[in-house]
Image (cartoon, rainbow, N blue to C red; front, side):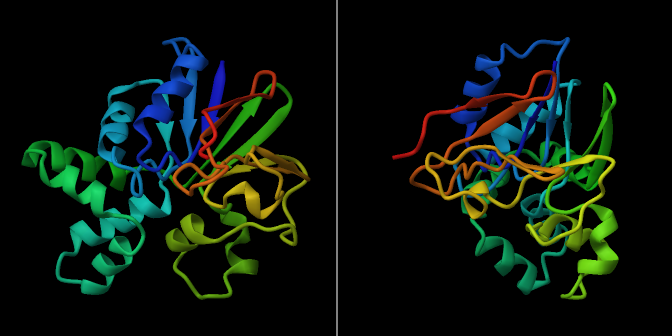
Length: 224
């Protein structure tokens, strides 16, 4: 079975709950579309678990990019402030408690993460991204970001013209921006599926997971 999840944001209990619900086994594969860290208390624990699994493929999220930028460039105060202003405190605390070898292993792992993958399931192609597909860079990069920054920060919306020969699956933008019904749920639009169900954002939010084989959805308990 193929599963897709995104934006865990330090929610170890939520992450483990989903794995138990889907009875995740060595014969399955999970694609995690970034933002494992920040806001919640257990981002480093989630990262270490993902790193230890051969059947989990992770993409770079904007929070992992902020972490990398801040820790690889400690003299750049603006990078540290950006990360800190976006919920870095619990991640940085847990990171500092690790030995140097584990710290470097995490940073090396994050630095090698892709920003996009295309997978084929039956006759359907799916483009997996944290925030935005590469092909929108030239037409939608109104802020003049570099390519990697655009891929992990841009927010896909209903006006963006997406490729018709594939389905885009993305995180980053909580789906309550597309559908105001609570609890927050996986959103299906035209040639696009949003799977960030707001874990770490508060009332009505939760962690969601999509199984590609049959489009079955799995959720943790709703935050009240």
